[in-house]
Amino acid sequence: MGGSWKGGSTTGPRYHAYFPRPTGRGTLATMNLLRAARLSPLLAALALPLPGRAEDPPAPPAPAPGAVRAAGPPAEAGSAPARPRLTLDLQVNAIVTGSELALIGLSVAFKDQLVAPTCRWCEPPQFDRWARGVLRWNDTQAASTASDVMQLLIPAGAAATLWVQAAPHGQREVMEDLLVFAESASSAVLLTQGAKYAVGRLRPDAWARGTIESPDDKVSFWSGHTSFAFSAAAAATQIARLRGRSGWAWLAAASFGAAALTGYLRVAADRHWATDVVTGAAVGTATGLVVPLLAFQPDGGRRPAVTLAPAPGGLAVLF
Image 1 (cartoon, helix red, strand yellow):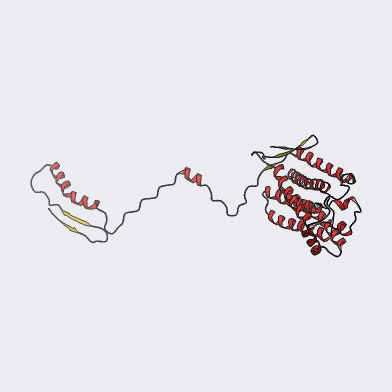
Image 2 (cartoon, rainbow, N blue to C red):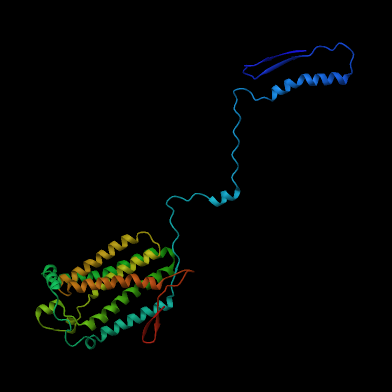
């Protein structure tokens, strides 16, 4: 038997084996064993990897089904967040608002009896005198009329904005928003009436005349126009923000700008000192921001730490 090895072929190694014809007598089993022994080198060569051919990389493992479900579909870019779900006790807040409006009506009806007989704060500080000289218009009546118009336009515009924003979500949300808005404004007016009667500050035009002609001349502190306008602006902004509505920052800029103009016009009309306007703006803003926080409650969440509830003779603060 003879054989030869030839390598370097592009089709792989080749092995040639030569099997001579047996000459003698032997059994068939012996000849088969000899053939198997001679084929062993050829079988070993076929088992070798082909030269110049890299092994295939292992296939990546399939992801676990649980991992795919956990990842989920990618979130859409710019998708709107879920709106906060708020609840409101309509009965309690309606009673509170109605009680405040009734007290405001009584304070106006008995104004002459409630106002102090003489001014308790008669002389203004130097800052107020300086601000009056700088900001007062020559035509004070025009400034007074403009401030009256602004006092009506601001709450009307804020309430209309809340109505338009809440309408797509149902009549219930419209009622809730307008009720809390009215509650905020009436709270600011009631606080203002109490302060006016208690402080008894002389208005700037009455101070300049040197005479008191009516009880209204002694209710300068703090500015009712300003506190009402700022409470409407703050309440509308706070309600829109709590509801998660887009554009609430623009509502705040427009409404607070108009409220600031109202305060300026009250000084220009010579009906209030500058400190009256600043205080009224602070009280109105605080009222408009706090009342919606107390009124609205998260749906299924923790109740607010402080709530208002009607009580005999007024309101009760519940902790």
